[in-house]
Picture (cartoon, rainbow, N blue to C red):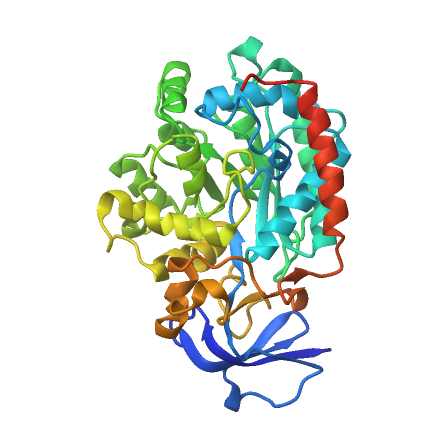
Length: 457
């Protein structure tokens, strides 16, 4: 077994309520698990590898609870820049229909690289479109290359336009094929053990792109396995609300409840258009929420009631959402946006820096069912990030409060990232990865896809 000691951090933010902030702190890691946390003077002086954290703020790695990594291929695409969700989707479906496995793979590499450099150590992904023999396997290969902890979800769309759904028939799948591939990826990849680097979830896309039958069968399949989580979009827009009322005679949250899509193994993306009773239902059932503030602003979808959800006891985590509805992959920036957006309508004291960081660590870990993530404490997975406090954007702010400066001063990129006890970012650089080559391949594919489906500016 190998040991790693990070010592002398100017400030260690553990997110552990018993010992939240430790001046001159350190962390002892054995293999991929945290063994000790505390003041450096109380830790062993030797280890197989020692990292001097002097001048750094160190905290748990951030966790991204909702993403569509393939959408890096259509970021900032003309014709989809200034429209709301349903129009945005209908304009992009044909372009996404041009994807193949290499496109899915390189887009995941780009999205994950950007996430890791922003402080993310665990990410989910919701791949729900599989044209031209695309596969979830391609995203899993990308995660293994980058070194990020990964929760891919096998998404699906089965309700095409000819049957009353939103997506064109050309990008939906037959439900038997969907369920067959869900079983395949679970059997091939899902690792339910503590400290797992790879857990699979199941994720029918949305009420307007799958049938009630597929939703029910997906729940049954997931719950016949250990620690398979369930994920979908719910209550993102008023258009979705109207669709559900017209097609199913219920608001989106109630429709989900009727289908069995609530519980501690379920989390919803967005959950903007909820009333007080629906928020209480989420709290009582243990259903989680992935909050996507930038995407919600970008598409004009609305402001989720995160303050009310937190007050009610709902599990809430942070998410960047799809790279074409954000259009970035900066999870720390997303955490800042979550804090600021709650203040817009509720005042400057409505949401604090500490609460926002809880969304991105403890909250996100709870949402995806990971008790081993989200804080620096003995027995937790060895995922941590560090920011040097002598950087330009911290000038002045870090002198007064380094933790507050992280969000209020808009920190840009980690200096250090350890995932599963392995150094993935050092001196602000992603290690053992050809980023320039990946960008070149990605942009060539993105340009070719868009050229086949030009959108009016």
